[in-house]
Image (cartoon, rainbow, N blue to C red; front, side, top):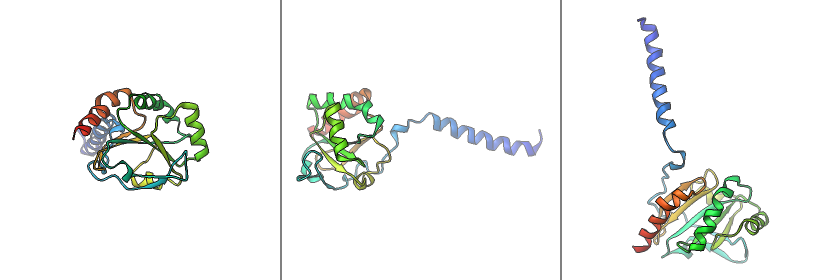
Length: 176
């Protein structure tokens, strides 16, 4: 075989192998550098009562979910019924982070689709989202009693993610 043909063929083989490995990965399981680290602190105005503020310190001593959502987010509609169901079960407090959204649109969206959140806060400029490493909406963070991020779910929460990962981890963290 011609040596000039062997080098491009080998390069093609390596690139093809990386492509196959990449196609087998789950894009929702991108590891977050924040797992195992304290959740970034914030103090934001509440969506339904802007005169009141809420911050991460308010949840100290509780296991809780921080769900990043927006009224303009199409994928948020996909997970929303599951969040409403989870809220009814009262397994874990859910805090909504209304991300880069008009507060009036956020309130209207929750009226229309149901409000699963114990409370929602407004991250109008997206600064808190940036601190949490959010690069798409929705994203959900599970935060333990000490304020440490224990799990991050990218994209819409699914029934499988709730059953297999989130709820078992919530129960484990609530015991400690």
